[in-house]
Image (tube, rainbow, N blue to C red; front, side, top):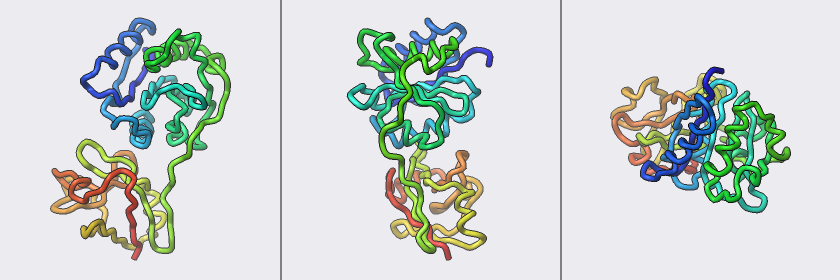
Length: 257
């Protein structure tokens, strides 16, 4: 990899100075670094939304990329700061349940960071701890030298369930357009349908086919395939979440005919 890449995914919002503060430290300590903002607009403290954004927003970066994820990053007993190595990339975050939701069993090495070498205070984890850690990783420090190998804490998210001819899915994410992402992929859905038709009834709105483009999702809500591979409910030029009255975590049934 040429110039090192560090990404930022946070719930800081756009009006705070935190992103500028962290970027300044990264540019000052990592020569030729490229800092990429995934988003700073996550809902405050929302680990489920953060995991979906990181999983899909960071997956195609080159090996060696360091991803800083600062959501609910308060250090406390049993909830330290960690580096998770996965598919040649490094995720620096807090062991607050987020990395377990994000990776589950599909993870490599997990090291709990010893923060005291990084700063005498670490109320702002991204600045006080994550930036120095990113610099060490980029400079070739093995992550085992940053602390001790640990397990991840927190429960993993429930997956979709199949009960007879009903697939029970959850709303995993709602984007800024109001598109509703389910926790089942197109390939998974096709594997269960096996050529059969289906029907969803969401607060009186019926969905019974899959559209291939947003422009086809009119005049009513329709199921389509998102760029992440997960199934998505959309309404052309409208918010499907508002039209259907759904929110993250809601259970939705796909009835197989």
